[in-house]
Length: 354
Image (cartoon, rainbow, N blue to C red; front, side, top):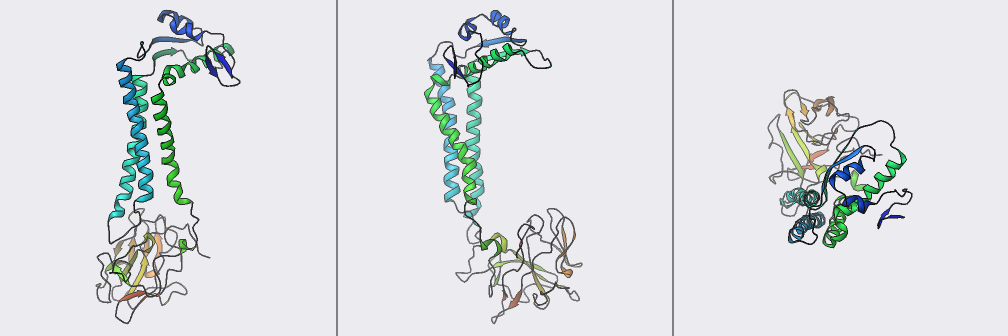
C-alpha cells in the first residue's frame, strides 16, 4: 500500500504528486485553479458541514443517521425471526398463515427504508459538500491526471467523516450485515433437498372431498353444469391443512355431455362427475372460470382454455399440457372420495414423473 499524507491507496495505484492537505486549505479560487489542471475539472463549491468538529449540532446529526441504521438492523432482525417463526402453510382452519407475507414485507420495508434514509441523511448532513464541473472530452485522460484523480477520490474517505465517528462505524456495520441477512435467510428454504414430496399431493386412496366451508360432498350436491372447489379432508374435526398442490375442481357435466378420456384414465370419473386439478399447467394460476354450455375451463391469468370434454386438453393460450385428472368414486357412506393420488405432474410443466 502506498501512503499519501496519511491516507492509503490500493496496491498498484500510482502515488500522485499532490499535497491533499494543502489543497483542502486553499481558497475556493485557488482550488478551482488547481483542480482545473486535473482533466479540466473545476470545483465551484466546497465546504465542510461542520467546520468545528464535535459541536452539538454535529452530534445530533450523527445520532439521527445512526438511528436510521439501527432501524435497518432491527427491521432485518425482525424479518429473520418472522421468517423462521411465523406459520406459512395454508390452513383452512386458521388464517394465521395470512400474516406471513405481509409481516415479511413490512419488516423488509423498515430495514431497507432505514438504510436508504440513513445513507441520504449522511450525505445531506455529514459528508463534505462539494460541487465540481468537468468539460466532456474524448479518449483517455493523461496519466498524471488519472493518478491525481485517484488520490482525490481516496480523499473522499475523509469527507465522509466515518473515521472520526465510531458510533456510525458500529451501526453501519450492523446494518450492512443485517441487509445481507435479508438476502441470505430466504435461501434457507432451499437447503432441504426435495424428494418424493414433489410428486405427491394431499390426495390418497379413500380421502374424502371437502369444500372450503368444510362440507363433505355427496352426489346431488352439485347441479348439472355446476362446479365446486374441493380439498382433501381429514378426520380430525373436519379441519384440514391444505397443500397448495391439492386444490381440485369437482364438475358435474350437463346432460348429453361426455368426456373422451385419455388412455388408462377411462374410469377416473364417476357417472357425470369429473375432477381436475385447479392449478393451470402454464403458470400455476387457478383455472376456475367454467363455461358449462361448451364444457370449457378458462384460466384468467393468461387466457389458457381447457376443453373438459376432451379430458381438459388445452385448446387455447400458452398452457401446453392437460389439467391432471383425479380419480374419484363414492364410498359406502355416499361421500365422494379419491381413489388414488394424481399420477401426473401438478401445475406448470416443470415437474415430470418418470
